[in-house]
Image 1 (cartoon, rainbow, N blue to C red):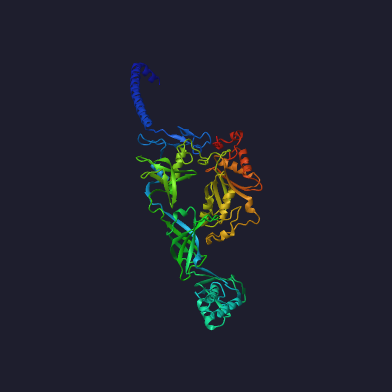
Image 2 (spheres, helix red, strand yellow):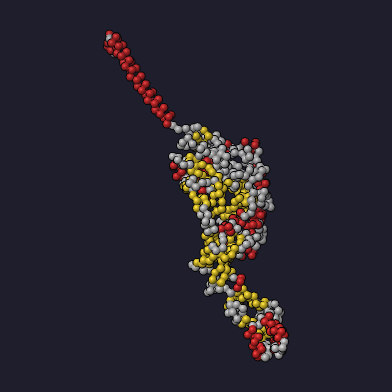
Length: 632
């Protein structure tokens, strides 16, 4: 070790020189490398900065929250999601365009259609029954008093020929009239008027010329006279039996010719504008499966039935083999051609979003690299099958979305653009809105409710919903066969639940409060003859189904709202849906009411359509539960 130290001391100048040279080359090398590294890094970061696109982050529960970086929602602490607003191509871009990526449009199953003109067409489904032709009905009455001695027709349903004997009658008055004729024969030449009067009297009593001639030839009165059928047909009513004494004018038999019958279909008033005389109806008979019939409309009843809200549409059918029998049920289809010469703008029903007073479509913006759409309100004309006639708002050649429309509208709501529920644009909301109706809190608004309505099938659904919608003020009606429940939206200033239930009952369907008249119920098609509701114990009348608007955000809100509703004595079920902000209730009307339930919910911090929660209670709610206040 000492030798090494001694060697360094002797050569210290050489060692110092080597260190200086090493430090110099080290500085040159590392400085160049650092400069190169910084330059490359600066260029890379500059490239990244230039290539990066600005993005906005929002909350799916609170769309009005927008930040320029990811993180947590300050209200509910949910992860923010990216909300990119892709710029439209060109300088003429509309700021209200909803721009979607190709992948998003494909995921939403968006489909479009070029608007064109066409001929409105509607398929009208009709139900009805077979009836006897009223022009071929004969009611036989006694033209003179007497006693039934013989009956040749012993039961109803028996077929008879024209002129066939139906019964034999003994009539003292007829015997006297014959004697008067026989006495008048002696004055036939000298007093012709007396003879003619005696003969005319017998004619008025329904004796034929042949019968009267036989009396004159025989020279003595006939004691028994036969009652003859005036037409060929079927005896549908027998009012007499052997030995009955008759008075003049009493009914004897009713005979109907069934070789030609009527089929009377029920047409709702909304279908009547599409039906005209001469239209062809294809129909089937439930009792004759596999057989198809065709006939033309011969008559449309000029009056609507005040109870069922339908008019009778009549067709006439030849029935030589008596295959069609009165009261058989029929189902018909009429392909309306009333607008066959018109040329209207038609769009599919799937392209339209309805919100009470407005009808909305989404127009695809042309000449865009990615799918872009614009909100457009239109005025609709009559319904035409799967299409609607557009009266205003669209032009031929424009392209509209026909599928995925609701998803486009949801995207517009999320980014605050004009949408179905928010035509003016602005911050979106996940709460349930009433479209053009004002907020509840003492102002006019639409009311939601549900009532029990009995029925069986799709025909029942159509009849129930049409009856409900026929009441002025009802904006929507949807009946569910599984739950036997009719969901309603209506304007309480124009109608009420009682009036709607009455209209449904008058169409033939029992409701929770009103029973359909038996005569109307029995006129329903066989498949619609549901099990009648039992009103004996008034159990149905005690239970109320209703839906009320309640504001909230999340699962915690749902639990709090339902718990508050169920705490009210008489409430049997409560189900709150965050999507539409509606609380569906079942409660005993003799124990509570909607007002009491809404007060209980407002007391726990949630605004309802009638009561606002106290600010102090609302402010105590968890951050994720602090919803957007009603009427703020």
